[in-house]
Length: 464
Ligand SMILES: Cc1ncc(COP(=O)(O)O)c(C=O)c1O
Image (tube, rainbow, N blue to C red; front, side, top):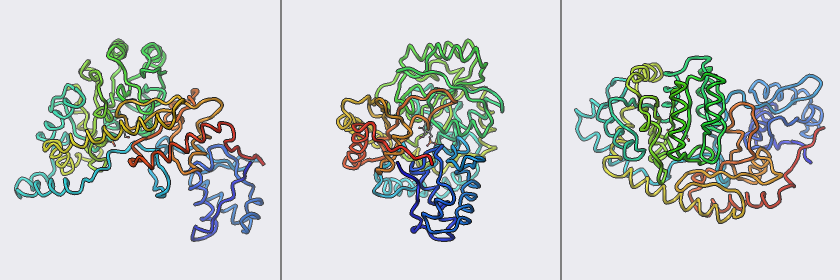
């Protein structure tokens, strides 16, 4: 049983701000879970040797920042994140922390290949000046052609450069697709556990998001059918290959069944294939099976680098102008300069080298995870960046994540990916790519194994 008493000695500035900053850190690291009641003003003031007024000011500051909420007569409690937008914020973490919370692209040395590509681009001053100009919102035709071929090779997409619009990464592509297809108040269906970035965009666009049940293969066609009848959705967002967070990949039969439901209910599909290039073998994407009803979202982030911010949508012809409008309104055009680096790496073969290297690392990381967590319900997919662990009874995911964070390992609970208020499985996502060195990954996995073996003594909090 413990009460939260922060060490504020390491925070500079006024004491009330130091307490609020310590609170923000504790929430971020999982030491203060959502819903936990904070100490009374008097209790914390006495413990820290400050005045009650200072603590009152600190709690007011934390409330202003959206970290906590006061309930009359009951006390102050840790708030849920204000927006779905906050679920996936990226924070700096200490070096000794094993961060298995984010799916990261390969961390190979990119400096020399970048220098070579940049030199090559600057070689011809006229061509370079042309690259540095403003361009039509869909992106340069040569770049679209390179990326369309890449999407065809690695995603088996039906890729036609004329139906491709370049974006500033996959997240931007999702946002653009939602903006083109839906209006505020429209219903968007998603898998019951989904990539939080889509929820961030949907929240900003005031869409109504409804979850669809999943099984081992991902979306259930029967559940999709009844959601279509119940909610008359405008669109479905889904990830048929290496689903984030569960790793599920739909079979061809499942893909056909999903398309059949969407076709009958006239539901547009937004298919996320950002992780698709990593898949060992995947059936045809929904987009190749049903090109008229699917907008495919892709990006080079998980293969090359997230910093290139190079992504794309491939859409049915009638949606291309609307997608172009959305891009123009948001950023005029995706950066042709970073897309040029991505295209050069694709053309000179470096992108394939990176992809193979990354796949190899992820394959090894998955077998390492199975070796350490043998006997537990761990789901991996060959070359996927993440794994999914269903916790044994009586463990609960939020508490498990908080305890792991206390022991220096960051992971994400099912709640991070949950849509709506339905029951959430007691599962966690391990981003295996977060710890590229086997020793570091082993350290993180051993901490998780220790927590799994203990099962019950996860710390509970005092209510006082
Ligand atoms: C399923 C999925 N879609 C989209 C994205 C965003 O891609 P990008 O980094 O290219 O914006 C991610 C990144 O983690 C992802 O996992």
